[in-house]
Length: 235
Image 1 (cartoon, rainbow, N blue to C red):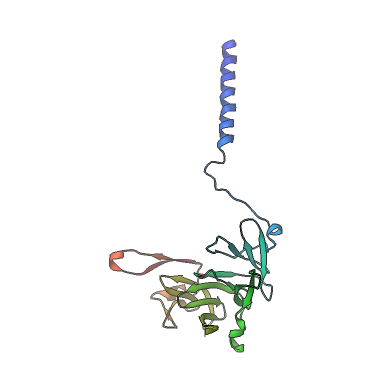
Image 2: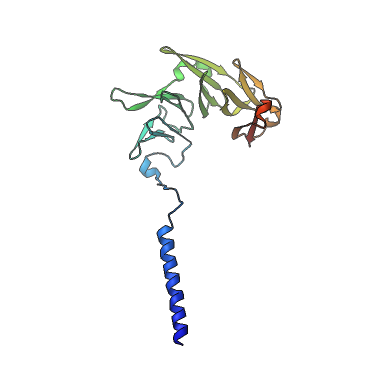
């Protein structure tokens, strides 16, 4: 009987010790995550895009504008029409470009150095100002592309002014991507296309994606020796 009680005591002690060790080490290997509610951030329940500048400041596409986060405090930068920001882009000079509903622009500092939203829509001809969400905002070597379903815009700074070019789809545009120095965009009902000398051209085999919703486009090099450009597309 004494032997049995001793065995049970040892087993119980091992179980308690194991639980204590597990408790001490239960956080090992897990990333440190802090969750913020919309009440804390001052933004919408949905977040669509995020970019980070060279200082480490982060910017989130939300509503009614862009949320700025410096690691400790949040600040809302409202767009002119106070609508959902669906896309963001950032250039090498830390200028943040913004795509929202029926508008797009960028963030610039005011007299106190605080960032505020500045619309670029006034540089577009009146007949091209009717569009909905700007789904992708992509900064490239050729300018900044703002892609909506109805229009595709490219802005390029020219001194104190902006050079603007607009492309219209046959039906609608899908999502756009920037890979290896080339701009790609899907046209619904047409297929996957790329920009060549300011003209959209069909990719070989791109017509098979005419009616799919393309969400992802990644580079994929099958053989570097053959220099064949291949891609992974996710629908």
